[in-house]
Length: 431
Ligand code: DAH
Image 1 (cartoon, rainbow, N blue to C red):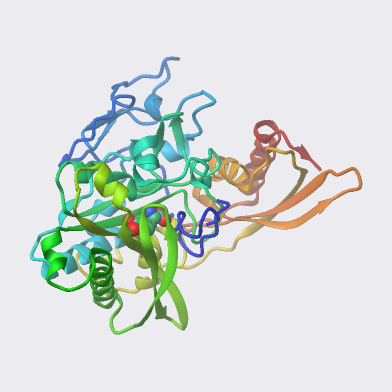
Image 2 (spheres, helix red, strand yellow):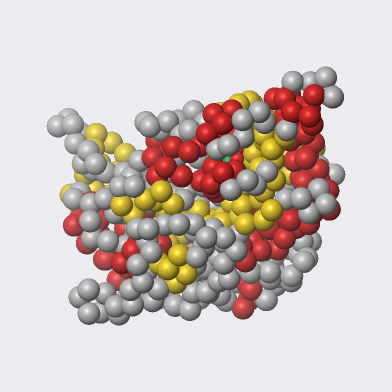
């Protein structure tokens, strides 16, 4: 992704317009706590039009039936690959013995204990949302880079795989919720390395105050909400990390003003924990909260889980290998992951003349499409422009399995396919 993100995709929306496998066919079917009307994806379909069986039969998410044909289409307005469709419905955040689920529950515990169960919890909202929900409702500008096809997965021109849990703020406000936590899988086209994966998980928090709550304090509504927000999140950071040093950084998000990032000093580094702020009045007004103020925050579960559980590679979250899954226990936060033997990586370089439409995210999508989770990193190692104005890029692809040794034949075959597809799909000239 073009926007600067330090570790495990976090604040795609911060810094004004600059800025986590194995295929499973038994996607979990869920209980629905909440239903999002979503007409485009509502069709049930068990067989592809060409007669082949779909990668996965219809699954239900957030009360909506989703079939492969509803998400992956051979149409220029669609950029969702099968590798992404296969992640829909996995809902790592609903597995109580998985680091992501354990962390979600620890955060729930904090809110339940401190706000006597006042926060309504949603973790089953449909990840297919409208462009309006994902962007317009939270005031993301029309020209914001996050709206591009290079950065977001579009099902069609009006429908995306949510790129953040903020996409649900407006609908929940309209439904009358004033205290809520939304956890879910979010999707972003991105680069390939140990902290970036095109699917990861976020939790959104939201709290509305009515005038009588701040009037007695002598503060204006915005200052009152900002103070409360900071106290709440400092308490959450201490609940998760213990007695750490913290600092607040001014930030920019389209949906909040003022906006902040919370950093903690952990393992000898300042680390961004979350983004937050006082909700823009326009969002409240548009959704039936006329005199209120509110705060909101959004945090990336992978980035926190990676440091809290010592997990070195974001792909591990998707592993079904027992050597990974058996290390975690429901309700236990203190566990540190013990790496099982690390297999050697294999590097392959590839050079080509790029064209105007070339982007690294498109290259990474091709690599993930061929190699899946065997692709560990894609790195630009050389870049030059010749006298004729042609630009050459050399990328180094690291292939490594988390679970086994790869054979030379296997890797050569992957690389052959990558080269072939880079040429045909990206229209670049291999050197
Ligand atoms: N949606 C932001 C992101 O994905 C995170 C965020 C920041 C959510 C600030 C919020 C907020 O609710 O107030 O980068």
